Image 1 (cartoon, rainbow, N blue to C red):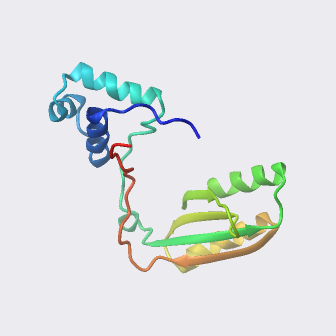
Image 2: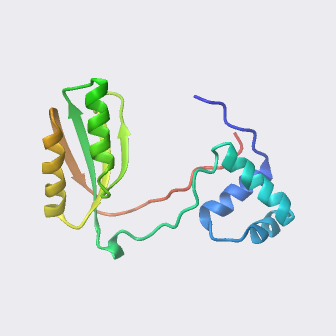
Length: 158
């Protein structure tokens, strides 16, 4: 693991503000943290250059866009070769419905978070996933309620 960059209280405040609303102008963010527009821009640019700030995106409501069902799929696989891994990962991440995908430790090999129209839509994706093979198991859990869903990372003093 890499050492996190040194962030002071102003950097952390900038992060907190941008995580809540990345559409704010740099001038407005600077005003909120007590910096000039140029000083604020330099801090944000440094965070981008260091990879602390990965992207500035808009977050949309999946349900209102026709994808009301969130599915967590757990995959256990037979194969672990580099060639198989490359093919497997490329096919999974190419699916737009897969919004998060992780290689896991323990008994689970991979976990995918998908947004889908309905159970039938998930089943179509499931059938495509099992064609990649060889898989030991694919099991899915359907989210019943979205209680907390955020892209924000904690910004407390470390």
